[in-house]
Amino acid sequence: MGSRSIVTPNEFQGADTERINQAIRAAAGTGQRVVIPRRNEAQDGPRDIWLLDAAILVDSGTVLELDNCHLKLSDHCRDNMIRSANCGLGIREIEPMRDIHVRGLGNVVLEGADHPRATGDSAKKLGERTYATDAGVEGESQTGDWRNIGILMAHVEGFSIQGLQMRDTHCWAISLERCSHGALRDLDFASTERKMIDGEHATILNQDGIDLRMGCHDILIENVTGHSGDDLVALTAIPGQSEAGSTGSTMVSSTRDRSDGLDDIRHVIIRNVRGYCQGGHHIVRLLNTSGVRMYDILVDGLMDTSPPEVRCKATLKIGDSGYGGGVAPLGDTYRIMVTNVLSKAQYAVLIGGSLCDSVINNVLHQGAEENAVFVAPGPEFLRDVIIGDVQVAH
Image (tube, rainbow, N blue to C red; front, side, top):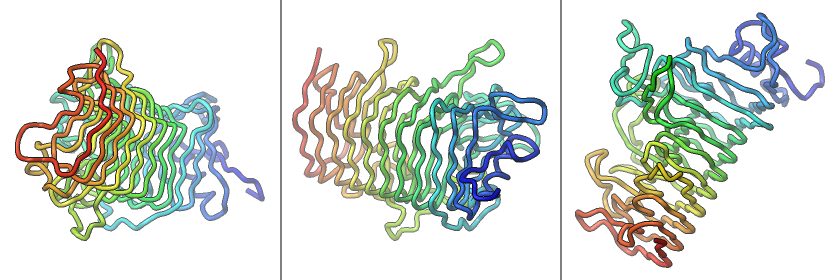
């Protein structure tokens, strides 16, 4: 490779994913960037698409640049598009990684398969409500899991993902678990909860845009556009009992709360989100359940761009009573600042769980006045929450 600053998969032999992963391994420890160009010099002839039969695996120190290229999952693939190499099937102990950067240059598209083998999260049985060619196939898991996620990273410190368009993902487009000190920016999503497959409309559930899971902290999310089938941006901390590396969960790391505060979601900025949920759910969602706290979150600049035929449930939803045994205890969701919200949803800000020591202001809602900032009925959910500068447009 000499002193060149880049390595490309066109220098290697094999299937597309094999060549990309060979390039990443060749660049490891050299300071070289891995660049996937638009033109794929494949063995069966040049083309302008890269077909992924398995996940691209990124390691510590990887800089992966996607240069005006189109990556697409093949119909054979039941795996992520991109995953941190420290996690996967059967990996029970996930070793920390650091300094992983995935960035798109120009027009970069990451797209789901024409005929997905599996879709939806781990609560969805394949073929029941959500499309899957693996439905009923002997020897294959019959529920969705973390392999349906587009870009998945776990236990990574110091990262960035930017400049990507993600289309028709099989579940969440991007999910981070116990990651820190990073940025997600300039990301565009296009999923609708439906896809035309063989001339028929197929349902594909759980098409969130961005999800931050348990233990994520010190992260910036900014300049998010487009539409998702489910929540466009979600922070979700929901403890469970799954083991790392199993297929029983939408998390590849363990869902067990470490109960020392390290699994709290904290110190997150969500800024300049312009989009909507085609499936009618939420644009931004903050959700933690008992055992994991969520605090020091800033949501600044949230614009609902829903077309006339689509109405989201809420532009921003905080908390919920339907997960993990009910509402998180009062005091577990706190220091949340929400400002500059433009809403056309049923609710501008829907508080469905507990919230304290927080501020909500500068909200403009196109709808009923009582739904501008709405607190779900039930036990006393709020303490020391300042709500101000709420305007209603009719």
